[in-house]
Image 1 (cartoon, rainbow, N blue to C red):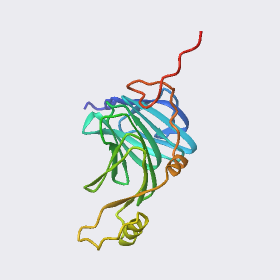
Image 2 (image 1 turned 120 degrees about the horizontal axis):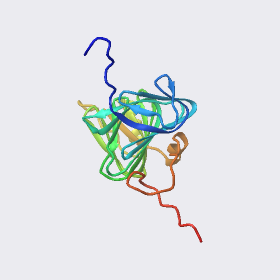
Image 3 (image 1 turned 45 degrees about the horizontal axis):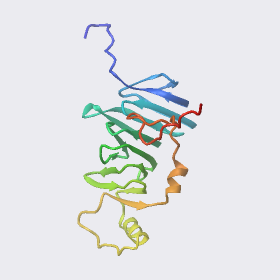
Image 4 (image 1 turned 90 degrees about the horizontal axis):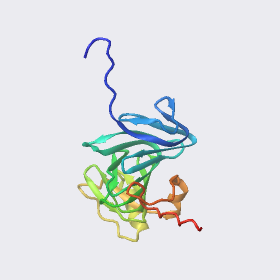
Length: 221
């Protein structure tokens, strides 16, 4: 690189569609702002930020932060949630992985998917598969979260936490294993997910880039 020259800017990842009390780095975010790889997006109390990426919509709730990049190739979006809650909506062609506390959440198949991911604390996540199934993985262990289900994901659970989860599900607690589980999933009511997450701000139209929504009825003459 020649002295005095600035490094070339990376290709854009997407664009801000809606922003309230939101930031890109230290700058205020606004509709039309371009998102680049490595950008840190954040919101204040009561804020909301919605961005569009090819075949994916990602939204942050209040007091949330995420860093965006690519995973493996430019076709795979990688969103590392630092804190707070995010909702993503992916078309069948959309590829997105959300990382939270070293756990990974991604669509389980190439199908329209809407998912809510919330960091409660360093050991607990809330995962809601609103539409489509999800693949959840943590430190080499995997599980499928079925469509329409909502779970607490407890990371690196203690024997006490595993026994409590087994009792809550009506199972007999297993004896301690030489290879303890890296996480447990505990089903919780859907109403909890709807209470802590945020609604996607979308127009009522169905297209490959807007999965899961019905087209508006035709206007009457």
